[in-house]
Each structure stands twice: as structure tokens, then as C-alpha cells.
Length: 462
Image 1 (cartoon, rainbow, N blue to C red):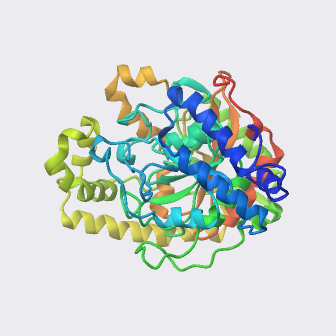
Image 2 (cartoon, rainbow, N blue to C red):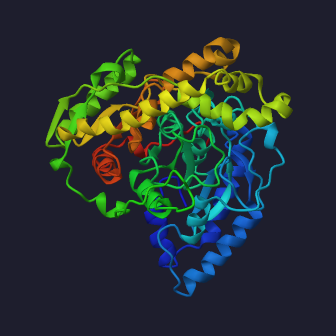
């Protein structure tokens, strides 16, 4: 495996028996051993079991028992996704010794696809933050500049993929936690429609807003991973029984048929100048790829009552007995939901339902929406540590453009669209109607293939 190998390329070589799953996994484990002490992208490395799974995959492939494009491919998991017999910590001392007895539904699907689990990725404690600086296992560092944050809360997932420690990681996204680190680390992060991927067996942040999705180095790799994990789960109350299309085939669709919308208000306001410049270049390119590009107006939800209330409801029992095991800042964030009344919660939940119903109206005139993923590039870690009061406002700013799509429940993807003069990645966000991940993937793939941003790799860690 080399840094430019895609899942599709590796999969083809595996199926032709030109390379073995063991060799690929060994290379990932070697990179983890060398780079993780710097990046803190992994909390737990499952080297022994990963090699055993790789050998089993090799045997199956040699017997012609091909399971699909993830067969024998190294995958990592955000460490709030339950894994049977392997600790799942949510990056917190509260759960430092927690070992689930069952795999989460998404892990079962990955295992059925033949994926090899190489470890559990670091994150912002209990996913309650956008920096991945608060973790009982060390702050996650950005592979492009280890003095900067990797984003969050799936910071370890993005850093692991960009550093070629795994081919794909499954992250969670409540306010942008897949897309924001994808943008800051220069990879692709896909949040599917709410209810498309089962969250059963995943430690929640806010059940009304939580999503699972893939982080990888290309749009095609995200499509392959989503194909494996998407689908109805009758035991998950958030799941919806909606047919799953062929996402890989959707990549070959014609973007010239798509109408793209640009919501300038909110999403394009107060951008870092380099982000603004990169976005204008990206829009100029996209305009040549689609049927039309026009400005649209959106009523953007900004209230966080629902997230605060649901986070507090989940953590209240642990706070009553183990508050000292949490980071104090995490406690402060959790307790922000303590005084929310039942009436306020019900009102916020009704507003969420109305927002998810009403957002469909915009897609009468456009097929996809295009925005910057984050308004600013990755901040410096020391700047946030020296001024703790800046941490939360900075995280909220980083998540400003991603959070509305969790409220709406719409599929949204982030992919690279440029770099700052100092070499920091800049992300482009594309969103579509509910259940139309195929449209989002189509335009993202066309843009990606027309540019070279996705081919860049960080030299600071080599």
C-alpha cells in the first residue's frame, strides 16, 4: 500500500491476489506504531486480532469467497462505537475500562463486508466538542501541521486516514464531527441522511442529531464504505426503512443535469480570506460542471437546546456518581442542559420536525447546496490552550456551517477544495435532499476528479 492507494485500487489487487490483506494491515500497523505517538489518532490498536482477520480474509479470497470491495481492507472506528471484547472509551476516563459484549450494528456490517478492524480512533471526550483537544488519551494533532488541531469530534478518524494508518474510518457527526475534521485534515467526510446508517451500539451525544458515516481519502472510497454500512436496522428506533441505492454506480452519473444552489447568507459570511478565495475558485469550477448555479435563501436553525438537553439526559446518571472522571470543560458543557424544562425540550423537538419538513422545499429549485465546510482553517493548539475561553467559541465557529445539516438531517459531504499559503487544507461542503446521497456523491466526485487537491499528502509526518 502507498499513500495514494484507493480502496478500489487495493481491492482490485487483492482480488487478483497481487497483494495480501496481511501485507496491507502490516503496513498500517507499522505506520500506527511510528506516527501515533505524535498524532494521538488511536486510543486502542488491535494489532493481533487485525492480523488474524487479515489472514482469514486472505484465505477466503484465495478460495474465491469474495465479499466485496472492503474485503481485507483496514478500517478504524471512532472510539464511541462498541466493539465486542475491545474497550470503547469515548476518550474519557469515565469509560477507560469499558469493554462491550456486543459489536455495534455498523461494526457487524463492516465485518460482514470482510473489513479488517485495526483499532479505535481518538476523539473529543464523549464527542462534545469540535477540536479533539479534550481527551483522556491526549489531544489529536493535524497531520499537515502537528501544531494545529485535527478538528472534532472525529479528529482521530481524520488524522488516521490522512496519515495512512487506515484506509477508512467510521466517525460520528452530531454538529459536523465528520465533515469538520475532514475539512481541516484534507480528506473526505460524508454524513448520510439521518436514519440511513444505524447508530445502535454507539455512545450517543444527542440522539435526535447523531449520524454515522465514513471518512476516507476520496469520494469513491466514502461511497464504497457507505454501501457497506447503510441500510435499515429494525432494532434502531432512529433508522428508516428506505431503499439503499448503488452509491458506487452513482459516481458515474452526469453532474450536468444537476442544479446547484449557493446559500450566501450565514454560510459565506465572515470567512477567512483564504477560505473565501478558495470557495470562489471552487464555485467557478462547479458552475462549468452543472446545469445551473444560483443563489438561494435558507432559514438557518441555530438553536442548540435539543443537543444540550439530550446530552444532559444521557450523562446525568454518570455525573451524579463519577463527575470527577470527566474533564471539567465537558462537565460544564453537559450541565448546560441541566435546567432545560420538558416544555422547552418538546418545543425544540417540534421545531426540529418542522425544520426537517420545510427544508425539502428548497430542493424544488435546486438539487444540491454548496457551501464552505468551515469558515476558518485549523487553529493552532497552543493558541487555544493559552486562552481556554477561546476554545468553545472557536469550536462553535468551526461547526457553524455544518451544524444546520444535522438539524435538517440532510446528507452532506466535505472534500478538499484548496490549501492556504501555509499549507493548511480548505474544505468544500455539498449537501442534498434526504436519502439522496447519490446526488451529493455525484457532484463531489466530478469536482474531485477535475481538481488535484485530493492527491496531496502531508510531508510533515514522513
